[in-house]
Amino acid sequence: DAGVIQSPRHEVTEMGQEVTLRCKPISGHDYLFWYRQTMMRGLELLIYFNNNVPIDDSGMPEDRFSAKMPNASFSTLKIQPSEPRDSAVYFCASSASGGETQYFGPGTRLLVL
Amino acid sequence: QKEVEQNSGPLSVPEGAIASLNCTYSDRGSQSFFWYRQYSGKSPELIMFIYSNGDKEDGRFTAQLNKASQYVSLLIRDSQPSDSATYLCAVRPGGSYIPTFGRGTSLIVHP
Image (tube, rainbow over all chains, first blue to last red):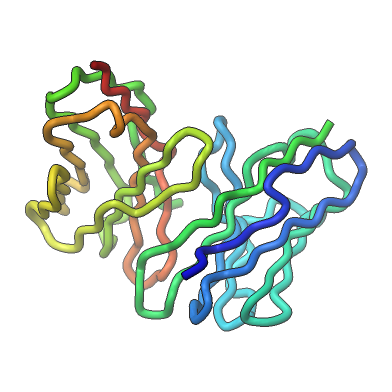
């Protein structure tokens, strides 16, 4: 059974460019989470969805960040324009309703130059 | 702001020893407590969860919860070099489905 899939695994871009991160949750999971991890701030929840609906986006750092979940099997996190301080590892995780285990994807390592 | 605090470490223990990792939390209404392990360059994976006061054992791992003192700990018996990783504590507040993660404790098990 495939786990959470994220793409790309690595992204290097220049400041000001648009970055789109993609996530496919585990089939049947109805919660999807986007996290950002840095050495300075640890693992931060950016936004989460339930049944494709954004529930809490209070962790999204600013308007440059946006996330969508057009269907149960796909979500995107977009940064436009990107800045060097956005450099981090971005994780997507999913979980099943009633279950408290979050399954994390492999992460996208983003470097903004 | 619901806080989850962990000593960043590194905690260094010899192979075969008991490693003790601690976590404190601020929300007294917290209901569920989790320990995730994260190897360098990898994603977090759940290794244990605990809901009730006391101890919960799973193989070499024991989670301990003390709600009165608002701390949760993870003991790793017979530590192995393969246990070297960062251990993240996560706490789910009452009334919320979403856990708050601590920043993790780095564990090094040396041969």
